[in-house]
Length: 496
Image 1: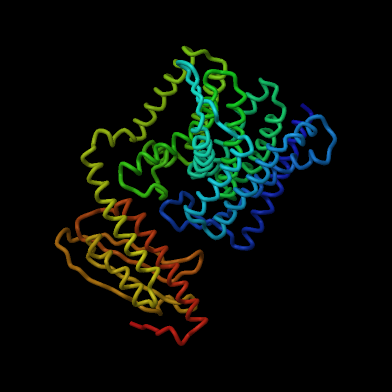
Image 2: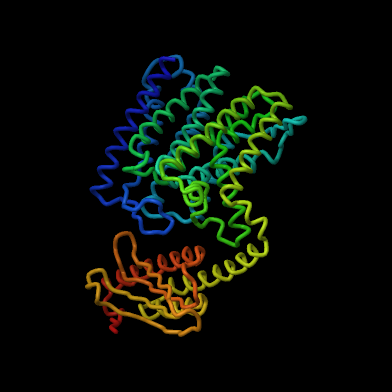
């Protein structure tokens, strides 16, 4: 127990110091998460990369075991596959998250690396080989072991990433998952898993000191994906060593909140015709705030309470027989259904005709956005960027569309203005939406859209689609400006 306490203390202190240092450097170097999107909950720029503190805090006491002579250290050093899986896999996932926080990584790159790491874990012996059945005999997976293991690892990594939407939420959710696995390992006398969990618990708490509302730093993808990776790997070890009839259900329940939120997002986006990997503001934490009018901090505390329910259920399942397991799962199912009803997730089932109309409109919107962004990325001048954007006017039934573009060194009133007018019948009052065309802190102009069809607010799906278009325009204009600086004779200046 002394070793476990020391490991916890070391990870806590290292995470505290690293997170503080990263926050100071991020402020000095401008590595901030700007509140420039409708998807953001925070209203001011906040430093990111706090996940570095979590990663460093987790690995610090484990690395110390290579230098200190102890019984636990000897056991840890002898577990070659465990060390390679956690250190190499964890470093790769943390590196991917770090790159995404700084430069931005597309879905293809993220999933390619995550699937590669998951396959590596499988090769090292991290395998889900038996699917437990609380109502009958367990099922041996055989050839299905590989795809299920890979999907589990990738799924948990992204589940923690998706739920990282409020101050202290992802870290708190991960802490409850860690607590569940620690108690299960302690009951079985598994010292190594206890060591891993106290190290991760200390790292999370050290980070949460700076991340709980109001947060002074975010973990970013560096932290959320790393937490998901470690919890996914440890969950496999927990389920494989469990002797209960619900072995796999225990880690699933321990991570119940992020898994439930991810599944709801997949179903919701599929039914409504939204891109599967697009961001939205319909996650559980968003709906608690918008539908139940809870504050930021209260929402997090409510979700902590829900995590506590999942944690207690997971621990109870570890000791329950088939009948008791069925009753526990039924009780949790009732709680989930009541929550889904309160948050409006079941409304879609009662209005399938509206859902189908929304789906058709979103599919058309996605097609429009794909064609516009593709044309924008191949534009060779400001004029061609405007030509690429103009189809938005007809596709969104706009009364007016305006694109203002300028070079970073130019005055706000300088540059070029493109505009198209399409008078439309309808209400006399107009709805006007303006999106900045900017890349990081560099402003290249603005996109202005006007409707006169009687709407009082912009449709949420249209808003997200326009943000994608504005990002594509900013990226291409930035490239054209850079090309102009390198080869000014190839660029024709435009003024209007």
